[in-house]
Length: 519
Ligand SMILES: Cc1cc2nc3c(=O)[nH]c(=O)nc-3n(C[C@H](O)[C@H](O)[C@H](O)COP(=O)(O)O)c2cc1C
Image (tube, rainbow, N blue to C red; front, side, top):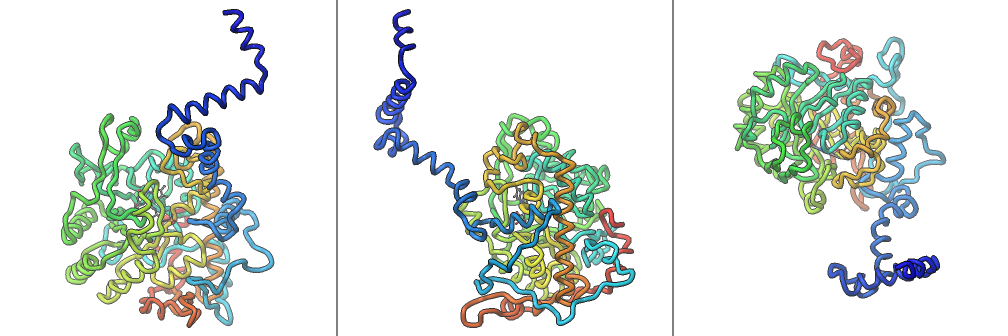
């Protein structure tokens, strides 16, 4: 035995390397049966798998140009990072975009910009930009709500995001006077740090479900009574990344905390079916909306990605005939994000935002309903020029999900579905979350929102207006094809926006329903 140990001790370091390589080669050729490449090319085949696994990082850091990556290119990400850190977010020497490219957007500037002077609210606060409409006013809800910020945090659950990320977002919206949408995973303790909250539920009814997984009005009413910072309720019909796709919360992911927040049992898989059990048709959905509004006093809206229009037509008819229905509609684009979705859904099901929203807005306009509804848009709209286009098309507010994640440190690693998010934002791994400094990250979210609002106001003023709700379709052009190069939005999407009633910013400042800290 001692001779054998002595023999091993005499093997040089390169001898050990040769032995290990020989063992790997034996495993590749004779033992493993899963990988043909490793079998046919023992040892070197591993190099191919390794390069493939680090390919995304190599391309992101070294190869891709500034405007090449998706969902968000380097210039877009850098703008969010710099804005969130209050660093210099300008670019020098002029644009590096091909401004003749298809779908490029231009805002038509006025000869002379809108002037803010005297005691105008924006003289004191360059970032004051509340929603021009009050949610729930038309339907005379008991507690109407005017969002104090036109940019807000979109639905993302505790569960898909880490506890520290959710807490950073909530504290951030409080500083910025925006609202925070809970996402489907219920109201967690991390949503209770003072920001306005929109409580969102989907087909799993997490946080407001009974023992059989059915919607419980009693639980919703209790939740709203106990948490007065909940300003509105959103019923999720679908989201752009996976419309009509249900989900499973596997038993092994259900911790005691998640079970308590979502009102689910531990040790059992929990299903979110593709469709709602609380209603089966459009009329029943309207009845549920009205019942929730009546019982909670809060405005109630729906969130959806757009495809076919027949059921929306039915909704518009019901709204017109009964004066009932959603107080707000959140339109999510097919380009929207998700914690996890099959690529076949994320890439192909539901329309991109511009097509989906324009179809829907036109339909509600034909029924003379646009003034009753607060339209919220989401789908990569968290950039001032994109938002200007969305407002010109008829939105009253925008929601941002991934842009908000980036402002608190997300690096677009695109591994939200693996629980291995390196920035700690979209993982439940305690170690990975440890690096998140909540006071710093909440300031960053707030600063991103404030910088966004400041630049958005500057663009609005350049177009000759006081508030972005005044932007009309003809104020924005989009490159549509080679023949005409660019067309105004109304000529591209074939409608004119209904003017939003707006007197001036000072009157909004005094609104009794104004949310956030600007009150
Ligand atoms: C991590 C993550 C989780 C999400 N969770 C939900 C959800 O629970 N419910 C929902 O309706 N949308 C959810 N979404 C979609 C977003 O709310 C939003 O509609 C979409 O990402 C488009 O916005 P964005 O382009 O600013 O990211 C999620 C998105 C992400 C990235």
